[in-house]
Length: 532
Image 1 (cartoon, rainbow, N blue to C red):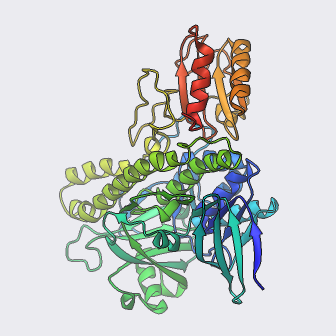
Image 2 (image 1 turned 90 degrees about the vertical axis):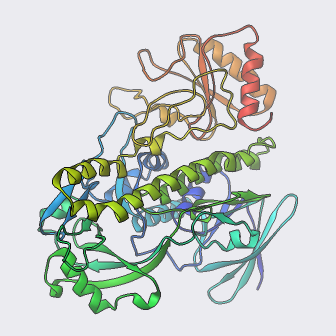
Image 3 (image 1 turned 45 degrees about the vertical axis):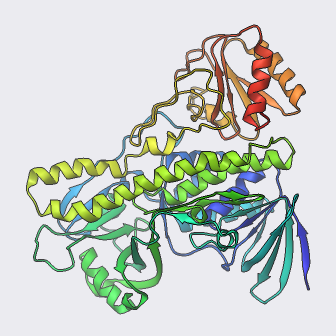
């Protein structure tokens, strides 16, 4: 029987990106249906690691602690270059410094944990997530998208929504139906990830490192010519071993993987058990368009790049966070003509930047690591210092600066550096984190959720009047928040203010109060929602 469902947003893909988008939309009370072809959440770790920015957003959803509980200790966010996981160590990267720029920290955790926590979160909120459901085809009109789906038993149904978001991965069927091409190399390598069981909980290494590159300075030693990745799965007995392949016929049989894993771990093959495998292709591509009409691409459907640095899943979650408030404002008829197109304008350059950064990380490992290890000591020491740039990426996570939906008012732009983040309330950048209480529980980031926020200093009453008038003129609520005395990282004076979007990015900043201030503020609010 063909059943019909009506909703606001249809999400194709129930991985971490699609589920994150659904979770963000619930903050706005926007209805959505999530369609996932798999029967449930993955048991394979797949991607690994969440940046501090992603953890900020999961903290806001109230699931940060649950995700962190399934991850590794913070000190494991380092690479070891070694003879074997339990053997001689040739070099260790330095852990990234924990700064004061966020109310949380990055987390070494697998995609399986993230997806499972998100699925539970959505189930508790009654969000319609349909597992074992394939998206077949869709049609768009001036005001809706109609999608035909098929369940595992062959039952077909129809879902009608105002918008459709493709979060269906690197081989996105939706992107193919839209005929949107990808720019960049399609295949830089093929790999098989083998999930293995080997109890090393008694060994300190399980609590000291999350990633290992097994290599050797001995040029004659076999199977060490490029180094091999071993990832610490759960800090106890799960290990992900990465096998380079050129075709599926090269994938090792379980018994072979057990023998190879034992060598890489430095233990007996009898102590290793094969669990499962997954294949993947390393690419460095970005879609030429992130949207077409009422259909948007999100996550790997829009960009795919080397996992070196861990920005794949994170970039997808940031896509979802950027898109969620814009979809919500469009559903509420608050969005102007330029708001939804700004999703592509803002997120595509970030995807290009993350692709380039991840590719450079990959090349550092594949072309420099082993040859330098087999060189002299000074060259190796210089390489290990440079290797820190692989994981020290706070600027890459917190520093993206958007140029659209922003009035710069002649202000200096926010500074971007991949390794270091420079807090600033300059238009286009993320509003800085500042603690609001002595217990360090409440952050300025907690202000930005489901509405526009005007942040000021001592002139709270006058700004509240101005914001209320702008909200009445436009029909969109604007909250007003006051920075406590003595807070830093803000350039506004006692009379100034900044307008911050629901995603926490600054849209407008003014340091004084000119005579036409009401007009200036109203213009800034209209601009931020695409009405100019």
